[in-house]
Image (cartoon, rainbow, N blue to C red; front, side):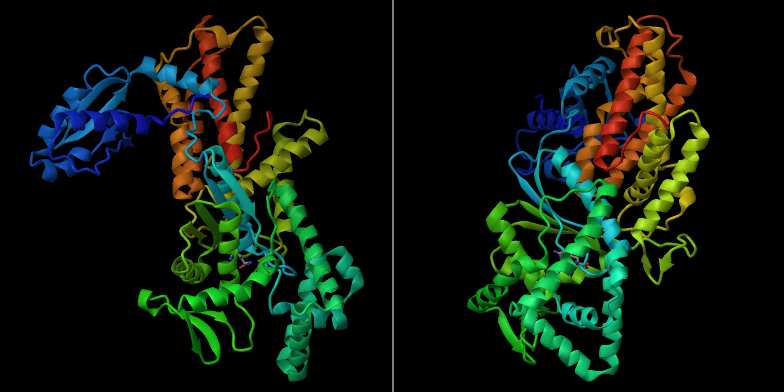
Amino acid sequence: MLNLQTIDQELALVVQESIAQAFPENLPEDFKASVFRTSDPRHGDYQCNDCMQLAKALRQAPRGIAEKVVAGLEGHPALEKVELAGPGFINFTLSTDWLADRVLQLESDVHRGIPQVGEGETVVVDYSSPNVAKPMHIGHIRSTVIGNALDRLHRACGFQVIADNHLGDWGTQFGLILMGYRNFLDKEALEASPVTELERIYVASYQKSKEDESWLDAARDELVKLQAGDEENLKLWKSFVELSLREFNKIYARLDVRFDLERGESFYNDRLAGILEKLKSAGLLQESDGAQIVDLEEEKLGVCIVQKRDGGFNYATTDIATVFSRVEEFSPSTILYVTDERQQRHFQQFFSVSKKLGIKTDLQHVWFGLMRLPEATFSTREGNVIKLEALLDEAESRALKMVQASSPHLSPEIQAEVASAVGIGSIKYADLSQNPQSLVTFTWEKAMALDGNSAPYLQYAHARIRSVLDKYATQFPEGKPAEAPFQLAEPLERDLGLKIARFPEAVLMATRTYRPNLLADYLFDLAQTYSTYHQSIPFLRAEPGVRESRMRLIALVADTLKDGLKLLGIETPNRI
Ligand code: ARG
C-alpha cells in the first residue's frame, strides 16, 4: 500500500523546504506553505501565492522572496518549469514523465492514491434520521443522499465511520398517535401503506385535540403511560417504529444506503435525567418559568430549554445525551450531523452546552438549504411532502425510456437494471452536484440531461469508454495494454493524465469541506476532457504501442469515473 500524498501537498512541502532554506531566520514558526491547482492552464498546473503574505515577516519584496524560492526548486524531478509571475506568484508546470509515473502509481494503488488521512480516527455521521410515523420529507431525502456521500468519502480517506440513523422515535407526538390508532385506524390502509396511515391518524388526532381539550388530556395520559413503560402502549409504539422502519428500509435499499446503527432518540431515554444532573453540578442549570434552561445569551444563542415545565425532556437534551453516549462508546474525533438549515440554532445550542460539559469532540453541523420543487414537478405531491417512492419511480421510468431508445438491443432485464442506476443516479447527482448551502431548483431536464452536468452524462462517458475497451479486446485479442510503455504524448493526453492524478485531491477536498459537489465538479471536468479527447484522437486506429498506451489511459479515466461516482453513491453500468 502506497499511502501517497496528493500533488498539492507534495509541492507544498517542497516549497516549504525551499523557503525554510532561503530564510532560516524570520520565518514565522507556524508558517505552512500552500500550493493549489491553477484555474487557468496558462499559469501552469499549480501555483503558490505565499510570497505575498511572507513579505511583511521577511521584510522583503515578494518578488525577491519568490526569486529565492524558485532558485531553490531548480532541478526538482517533479517540475519541468517554475515561473515567477506578477509581483510574486510562483507557477509550476509538472514534468510530463513524472506525471505519467504518478498516474501509474494510482493505477496500482488500492486506494487510487487517496491519502489515508483518517487512519486511526473514527467519525460518526448522523444522517437521514426521519421521524417515526411520518413520511420522509425533502429535507430527509437530501440528508440521506448528502450524508451517505460524506459517509463514503470518509471511508475512502481511511476513517472508521459509524453511520447512525438517529430516528425520531420518541416524543410528544406518540400520545396523539396512540389516541388516533385506537379511534381512527383503517387496518387495510395500515397494511398497504403504513407510514401514510400512521400519519393520517396522527393528523386526525391532532385536529381533534385542537377542538377538544379532553382529547388532548387523554393523549397526554397515554404519553405518560408510554413513558412509564405501560405494556400495551409500549407494544403499540414498537409496532409504529417497526412499520415505519420497514418502509424507510425499502427506500434505503433502493438508494443503496446502509447504516451501522439505527438508534432512535428512545435509545437515550435513560440518560436524560443524568444530563440534568451533570448540568446542575456544573452550575449551568437555571429555572425559568418552571422549565429548566441553560442560558446561552452571552454567546448570543438564546436559552436552551432542557426540561419543560411538565417534566418532559427536549430535543436538545436527547442530543446532548447522544453526544455523551457516542463519545463513551466510539471515541470519535468528529461527529457530523446532516440536516436542513432550519435546525442551525438547535445545533449551535447543544454544541455549546456539550462543550461546557467538557466534550472535546469536533461537532459539525453540515446543513443544506431546501431544494425547490417547481409546481407540477411531481404528480404525487401532497402539500409540502413529496412521496419519495413516487419520485424514485418516476426517475426510473424516465430513465427506462432513455435506455430503451439508446439500447434497444439490450434485454428488458438489463434495461431495467440500467434504468435503475440512471434514474436513481440522476436524483442523487442533481442533489450532490450543487453546493449544499445554495438554493437549488430541481428539474427533470437538468437532472437527466445527456449533454450537461448530470449523472447520465457521466455514466454515459464511462460506458462509452468501456465499449471502446471491448472493441479493442475483440480486435486485438493478443494485446496487453498493461505491459506497453505508458506515455502522455499529446497535450490532451497530458491533460487527462493530470486530471486523473488530481483525483485524490478532489476526494480529499470534498471530504475536508463536507462538500461532495467538489468531487462532482471534478468528475464532470474529467468527463468533458475525455469527451474532447474521444472526438479528436484516434485510439483503435493508432499505431501499435501508442494504441495500447491510449487504452491504458482511457481505462484509467473509466475507473476514476467509476470510483468517483461510487463515492457519491452512484452506479456505473457498462452499457447505457
Ligand atoms: N429527526 C430529526 C428531524 O426529522 C432529525 C435528527 C437529526 N439528528 C440529530 N441528532 N438531531 O428533524
